[in-house]
Image (tube, rainbow, N blue to C red; front, side):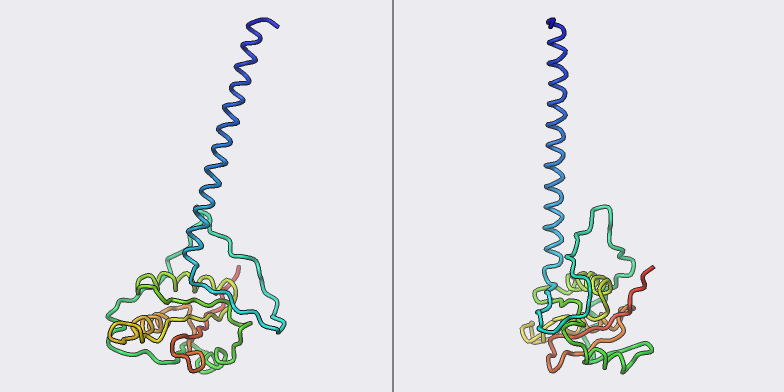
Length: 204
């Protein structure tokens, strides 16, 4: 093999090595991005608690894990709602509420719900009012993908400044204003949580 041929082979091998290194770096960067996305998603959903297992046979429903949203697929926030603090400061929302055609029947449906009917539980302890409303919008979307009933734990407000149940009132006023909410009711004698009934999501 001539000197020129040998040098040409070295150039080809060098270019191949550069390409392999570039590919390795791209794969490493992609893995880091996926890890960062998973960490952000886990932080957003930290308040959603899985339901306790029971000895009864649950009705068939999907058990696949939640898949983090990709960067290019953003959640539609056009229907997100927010209410100001002035809406909740001067009055106390009811322990039960229903609107639309269902009325009392929707309340009865909630009161008759068991653990198998409840899609997910959201615990809002530790959230600010603004943070709670963001998470509530996410929670509504999540529950509607799986069913119609969810549970929201907002607390009784005994630990709040002045013993005023600010977050409790906020959540209930927020539910009364949301167009996807058919009804809510306190769960048993617990005034620190509500069961919420949502409109069934239309699938096309």
